[in-house]
Image (cartoon, rainbow, N blue to C red; front, side):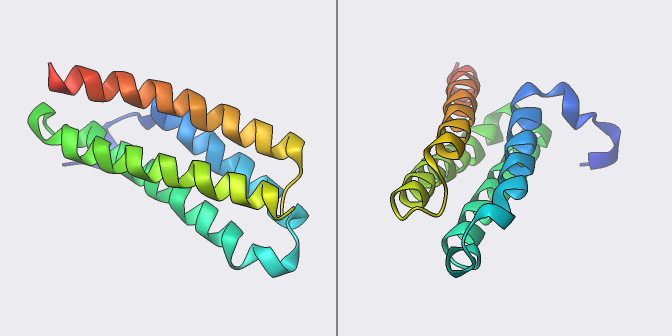
Length: 120
């Protein structure tokens, strides 16, 4: 497996998750300090795990992708919960929450299609 030979940005779901992390990162300083190193750090790590999982799945043979993609799907659901929690404890405002949730939903749709195609 040679990660340097692929162009990750030709994979739309990778680009979308990569951009989601950049958005999340840009919100960090707006997050209250008390939440930045707990809940927010968990949000960031979860998205990084998703980026990593997508990159890994893109390099695996078709028969091995399914379990990796299922793990990514689980992480995506965790991200949804963490973002909702961040909104409810007022670590982020509604506007930021909507941006994050919209991106997660789009990644979820892309991921569902990919998972479906690996089962065929």
